[in-house]
Each structure stands twice: as structure tokens, then as C-alpha cells.
Length: 527
Image 1 (cartoon, one colour):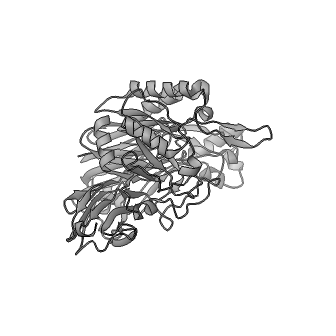
Image 2 (tube, rainbow, N blue to C red):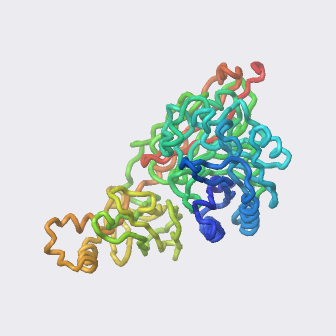
Image 3 (cartoon, helix red, strand yellow):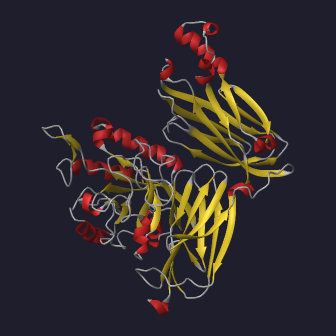
């Protein structure tokens, strides 16, 4: 199996993006996404917002005449940008039937010219999609049932094999789990009834994914959800087979590599046994791993605490991950102009090699290029905002995986400023590159005043462009293989005796998470 990355809820609303520029926005999304994603099932949003004569802001429901032409454009571009084995696309849309009652879902098709079905009842939608070999991914199920949460009494597991555990809304895993749903104040918090754990507790077979829902025209935006798929090939058919087999998992942002097995099974499988249960996990984080939790029937039964379990190497050749983060700079709050800032940089090893580079990107314009086995260049774009808070477009990060002697010099160059350090030094501490003199020059040129006459020198440091070189993490800190064992799976679920499920929740020290799809055990003598 190969691991492929995609975003199954890169949402595009013509009304919000501008009807006149909509095709241009869609093309830019496809062209950017194929640089850093393996597949992009584009999601059209067939709804619009309007004000009643009395001034109430309302969202449309169901089919409207203008939607068909917009759907034709989605299908045409999905077909145009599709390239099997390189960048897989397909047409999709967010269902806008009676979502209030039945819960949200996103619909995707294998074929190039599918119909736009906005049936009001979810059961009617499922019946139509079954005939078309389409799938419907359950979206943010954790809201209150009857108010955009998922009603698990109405689920077709064949049509809807996947559920979204995390998106920009937060996590729908359960009510006492990490990452609450606090992003959308109008829709309220998550509540018991429609969460992923509620569905699993019923014995439903739900594969786990995460996906964004609000990239602002940028597909695969870091920090709001992405999914990994273990598939035999990068094609629509290969992905569809993996979706139906539930060989999927969700991440919040960092591309944590996750493999999870039980006896002879892999994530998504259903096994028949009453005997011993042997579980294993292989994890490679983007940054330092904190813990791995094994969750059985919605309870944590095993925990591997990884934080602090590794030593920092001081000699020899070392493999490590080194994050470089840019984005701090002057704000309009202090009277400076806003807008974009471009960062040109290079990382060069004097010995050893750069094995990989992972971008944690949230907006367009980011580029990475491997110049040689020991050198990378990067072109990063950040957007400077007005307030004091860091925004998700203010910072962009590249995580380099290097293998080098600990005492060999490494040179980081950003916007003409050069910093040289050894891997041993990087493993011990983080550092800042601060462009304070440039900030003084900006004060002089923008305001026309002598920086020496400014009473408080904070104005220069606070408004200086900054680069953070994070502390490097040795391989032992971001990789784990763990095993656990139970003598038997036990009685099973209350709602489904003899059936049990196990899944993983992985946490990094920087707060990034991953959730595996479950593995189910059915005990033949108890079914």
C-alpha cells in the first residue's frame, strides 16, 4: 500500500468567492493543490445567502435554477485537471437538502458527468447515490441531532463509509475528547448524539477522515484537517477501493504517518475472532510525538507516553527534523502598511543530506525546491495583519528532515541574513533571526522620522520581521513502534454484543493530532 494525501472538503462558494472570478479561483486551487496534494475531490457549495425584506439573513435550501450551470463548471474542471498516478480529481458537492434534520454530508463521484442531486430527505439521496456508485462523507456530525448533527438512525454504510472526525469546525470525535467545536458560534457546541463515538457505539462501521471545509480558496490548508489514504494506486478506482475499505485516517495539519494493525488486520478491517488481540502502531510525526492512545469501544485502554523517552544524540551521524518558521512582522496596528511579504531562503548542509521537506502552508504562493542532495531553496509568502494576534496566514513553516554529522555546519539564509550552526546546537535550542535594523529603516522610510528619536525601542523589535529556527527533533523523538495485547476482546458493545472496535489517537507536543480508522472484531459465538 502507498500513502496518499488529499482534502475532501476544499469548499468553493461562488457567492463568497465572486461569480465573475470563480473559474479563476477554481483553477488556481487545482494548480496549487497538485503541487502538494495527491488528490482533490473538489466540493461545490450549491447554496446562497440572502436577506429577507425584513432583513433576516437566510441560507437557501434545495435545488435552484442557477446551480446547474455552476455544477457544469465544477465537472468540467475536475475532468480537465484529473491525471491518474499524478493528481487525482473528481467532482463533488456539499448536499444542501434538509441538512438541519439529517446532518451534513459531501457527495463524490467516480464518473465525469454525474447529476446534482439535492433531494430533501437523506434516505432519498442515499438511494440515488447507491445507483451511481457515489459516496457521501458525513460532515461535522457532532452538532446537535436535528440541528445539523448526524442522525445515526439514517446511515447507509455502503454509500457513506467515511465520517469526518475533524475540520475547521473542530473535532466531532466525542464530547470529552480533544479539540472542541468552538469555531462556528452560530451552530453551537458539540453534544452527545451525533458524534463519531456515538455512531461507533451503535456498531456502525465508520472510516475516519479529516478535511478542511474553509480554506478560503486554498485546498489542503494546514491546521484545519486533511486525510491520509492507504491505497494500491493513485487513481479514482484505487482511492474508491480504499475509501470503501476504510483504509483512511485524519490529521489536523502536520502529516503524521500512521499505520495501525490488529492481529492480521489493518485499519478499516473487520475480523472474526474470540481469541487474543495483538495490536501494533507505527507512527512518524512531523515534530516530536507526545503519546499514542488506543481507544477501545470509546475508552482509552492503552497509552504509550513518548514525551521524554528519547535522548539527544551528541556524536555521530544523526537523523532529525528541523522546522523553519517565518511570518512575524510589522502590523497595521503600529501604523505600518499591511499586505504580503515574500521570504527567500536556503538551507544548506556542509555534510550529509536533506531527506525530505514538508510544508505546513495556509495560503497560496509557497514553493520548495531541492537544489542538491544537501540544499533546499524556499520561497514563502505571508500576509501581515493588523492586530496583535498571530493569524493562520501570518506563519508558514517548512520542516526539513536531515541526516548529517552532529558537528557539521548548517547554513540557513533568509532574505540575505545568514546563520550558521551545527545540528548539535539545533538539537539543544531554538533561535530567532530578527531583522531589527530593517525595522529601523522601515520606520525611517515609511514615517520619515529618525529612529533615534522614538522614545520606546520596542517599536523596532515588535515590528521587525522574524524567522524562528525551531529546536531540531532526533528521529527517536518523532518515530514510534508500539505493541499491546489483550487476552480477549471482551463482551463487546452494549448496543451490539460481541462487536468491539479499536482505533488510535496520536498527539504531537505541538498540539497536532491524528486519528486512525477503527478495526472491528466480531466474535462469531456472540453475534
